[in-house]
Amino acid sequence: MDIPVILVGILSAAALLLPALDIALRRASRTFSAYFATFVIAISLGIVLLSAVGVIPLTESVAPNLMRNDLMGLFFSMVVLSVALLVSASSIDYMKNEHNISIYYSLLLFTSLGMVILSFAVDFLMIFVAWELMGIPTFILTGYRKKDLASNEAAVKFFILGALATGILLYGISIMYGLTGSTNLPAVAAALSKLSPDMLPMAAFSVIMLIAGLGLKLSIVPFHMWIPDAYEGAPTTVSALLSAGTKKAGFVAGVRILAVAFPLLKLDLTLTLAIIALATMTLGNLAALTQKSITRLLAYSSIAQAGYLLVGIAVLPSTNLGLTGLLYHSFNHAIMQGLAFLAAAIVAVRLSKTTLSSYEGLSKTMPLTSFSLTIALLGLAGMPPLSGFWSKLVLFTAAVEGDLTWLAFAGLLNSALSLGYYGLIIKRMYVDEPSETIQVREPAGFTILLLAAAAVIILTGIYPAPIYDFAQRAVLALTP
Image (tube, rainbow, N blue to C red; front, side, top):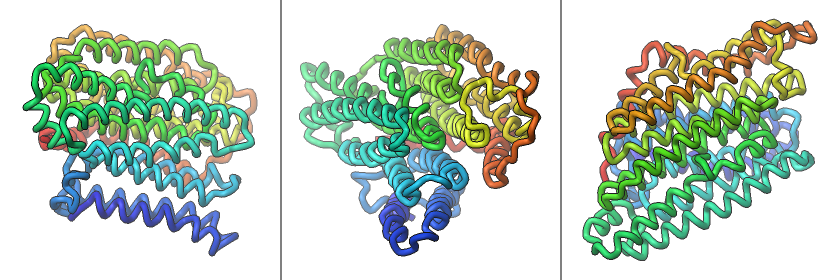
């Protein structure tokens, strides 16, 4: 079955249909839009999972030069659609008092569509179109609360830096097209293998431009500046989408491009990317230690996690274990980071606060939310036996295999450093006394989502084999 075409058809039809349904249903549209979008994303995720376990066999795509129907695309589609499902379902309660709710869900579906296409895309033009299809709705979603000055500021910063990154990405693509005469990745690979030596520096420059262009969504240093303001100003569910979803879609584009470019160009950016990875994880963790807002803390935590993921790309010329670790940690981080932001969202709704002081004694007033958030934070810190421990272990092992033992050691130190702020939140929830002892009602639907995500973190930590094996098979199947 042609999974990319099916997913594109379902998601695009739903995204375009929602505004029309909003007009037709009028008052009923608020509830309908939320459940309709959630149902569509759940169906799309179900198709991906059925294909991943072999129930639905993979066939060659009808547009193989644009989208490749492979395990890599399935893996990242699983990741981004899982995040989209969490965001859509949690928004039923979180966004219930907002206006133009059908537009919100339509934009969410368009973002999901862009992420899915990016997961399967093997052509530079398709990557660019998917990048914009994913990016433009997130600019709008970030500034969705148009009467909120913080949301407006976040959207403007995100848009300006996003436009800059788009220009850089397009510049890198244009150079690569000029050198190879094609935008199709396999054709580009064939042309690069025959490229004259005097053109190799220009090809290397093109790859560097591509990395820089992708760097915005990846939130790696020095392209991270927009992250804290955007995550704090956007609706918290949108922050979860940006941190746990769109970032992973950016990484799959980087993997597909660099897996082709590095071996053929004999381009050794290992030390450069290793230094960037170190700077990203260290800056993110140090900055997180100084934050007083939970959303800004999680934003800097997301930057640090991007540094860990970048380790998998840094060791790409030396070992495939790095890519396996990148995919594996992408899934784990998506669930953990998504859960952390969604827990922060429900606390913000119920307590109308986002400061760390509002988490004092939270275990007594919101016990299920506190438990779920604790699992997410310990997983992000890499505490065994939770899933984050295993994926970090794979990444650090890959660094050792790639003769970057110092980077693995730095990663371990950074993981220990992150316990400082993760542990502070847990301490506030379970040790400190609340300023008010009134029990806060935890919405049943929202709480079920949080507990389900926490269960995934625990179960995939106790039994990590299925996700790890899926990631390993996806890497082995990645050939130009």
